[in-house]
Image (tube, rainbow, N blue to C red; front, top):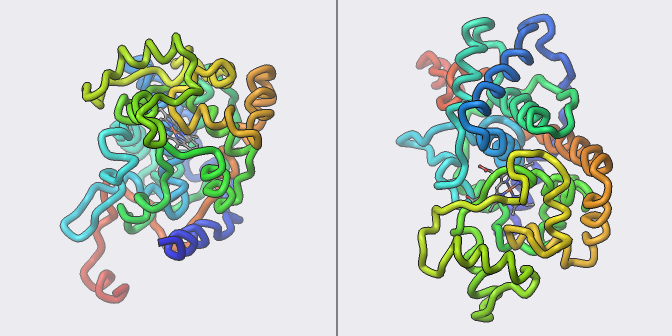
Length: 326
Ligand code: HEM
């Protein structure tokens, strides 16, 4: 299992030299405007879609690189990533990506990859929520396949502690600072009771709550997520769940982190000073966050790809072509 993980990770580290800012400036000059326009309309309909779309970048890029493998629906011969442990009943807003793709296909068919749409839409989700804006590198291809098993083996659990997260991120060339800054994405959005009941009632098998949770906040979470209650009820990941800001880090300092994987960044000595720094200095958080997103966006599998016409399915191929590939 460990060797498999190392192999999967090594394939995700191939270089991303061909990615460029403004990659579509000649072939689809309106691409970035269209993505931002659809993203902002989606946020008017449902503000949470910003968080849900932005999370897609993390779950796509960590599993065999940023190649939109995440978006493929299951087929009779392929179990995709949508139903993996971390994604099932949890990832959402796939329809926003579909809407962006449809709008792009009308203007420049078969030019803009679904993998690049995820990267642009994630950036726009952050910028439109009050966070930083930045130039993204583009030119990714979409995968020809997806793997539920790889997603299960790689994506971290909400129970993870800081040292496990540091190890995982380091395998992707992401530093401790990248880990802490990227976790600041939990400045927007929601999580399910399913992801926190263990820390409310049985942290590390003790039969007791996580002592790091501030008592008033714990009362609130206990009400929201009673033992044996509905695991699909959701709570805010920080006190300002629609604003991309450094409130998340302020909350961690006061013991009000929602997930165990959040609060552990403050209780663990190796990450505490970064949490404190970001809680006091929003611009240093924004700067580190942008660097982390760009580094994460550089992850590539090195495998062959295509520009999908529909983000949910690989393009159909003439029978001869399929035959010669096997
Ligand atoms: C450091 C390791 C991380 C862990 C263990 C983790 C885990 C989780 C969990 C458990 C949830 C709630 C899911 C649910 O209960 O259904 C969540 C939500 C979310 N995560 Fe993470 N996450 C991590 C890092 C990241 C990163 C790097 C990003 C993006 C850059 C990200 C973006 C988000 C967003 C925006 C949400 C809210 C989504 C929504 O409201 O639909 N997370 N994460």
